[in-house]
Length: 445
Length: 158
Image (cartoon, rainbow over all chains, first blue to last red):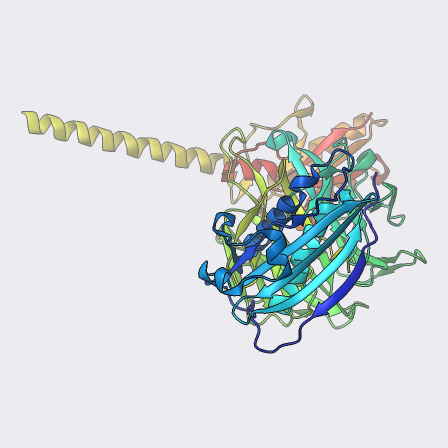
């Protein structure tokens, strides 16, 4: 397997500081997306061939990925290229601001690239057209095969400059790829870029695999596998492909998730009809029991400061969400609304908990404050669950299943995303049916 | 008369619809009692007269009277076949979250295991595994299918 990490040489050569520049408020649903012109990157004529890549089209292809990223946010409206008024190389030097304003663009992205000596050199600039100013610029060097990540990193930098929030484009999603009839489903671990490109399958489908989750600090993954018919939590290094069972439990372990520092796994262990929450330290291998209750305790999720764990328990009779200190003390129920609640997931910003709610045969994805107040249901459907946060805490990805007919026909499972504003619901394209998504942190952080 | 004939036809259709709907309601309540499946449609047998599975109510793992009768038959059968070991597979329907369903399946399988043990079957002969909602026996999205999928199934290992 190719190494996932490439070294980027960042070289920030100009950042304009100005207070009057354009900004996007992403805390509300944006009904008036910012018109932005993304010029194809100019390809330097001195560029050399590299491993059969179509270098001439590289500038165009990078700009298309940026465009697609921006359209997916719902915050930007990338303008049609046919209307563009300047050649990429000239615009990159200094745009004729008044001409770009004529096509109603408010921001412009320009750039150029050179492939030489097996290296890809890229630079881009973001221009504020109303203020007639450069807002940010960046140049970096990497291997040419890394060009898609270049597009995502540029997207992140522009998103950060315009919204004031960290981006989420140079990220990946791990999920369970599904195929076959509903009662004989084949499930494989799969990973893809957040825009659906570069899908890789990490298991062969010989055994049932469920609920993969990224380590927030590196490219390790924890998931559940029925390898040898022993349902257990595993740890997988997606760079090397090595994997191991987590702990030595005499029964099913499931519902794993990493601690925010990536050093522990928190999960459920089921024995004699009772599921409780445990942690295992990945260095010392020390196992700690966190809950001890005759009810089902599962779906644990750490707060980003590591001090608390939200979890799902039916100790009140039905599934509800609870929060406790990470040593298991101070257990407090936080959901009291109509219906039952599952899959609490703490936002990476720490301010919200995302959840699945079930009520009157309908399934909702929602968010609430960490004390259970301020519940907002973002989307309702026949069946959906398992939200996972974008690393900036602005978007949730989850999966949705359709109702099936008497022989299981018409059944499908797909990944969807929605902004925590409740706007911008979108289906994520996957090669196969898909479930149990987990969003990585930024790769280039 | 034309009008009367039409009216007669309409009444007949209404009457037939009423009978049909009455039938389907009766059938439903015949196979599901208080949310628990009581039919035979998906049931297999460990031996003649020994059903392999018991059914549960939504979100529950308590055994019904019928389930206990089935498990006593399984216990009798296991006592007669002393070298036999079994795995009890616990399952849930598709209308819950995946992780909770894994726990629920485990709780259901253990409810059946515990009952077998109270009838003298050694725990060493009974292993359990939960499949949560992963292995539905009936793939339909109907209350009947869900009731058939909320089950624990005793499977011979050797």
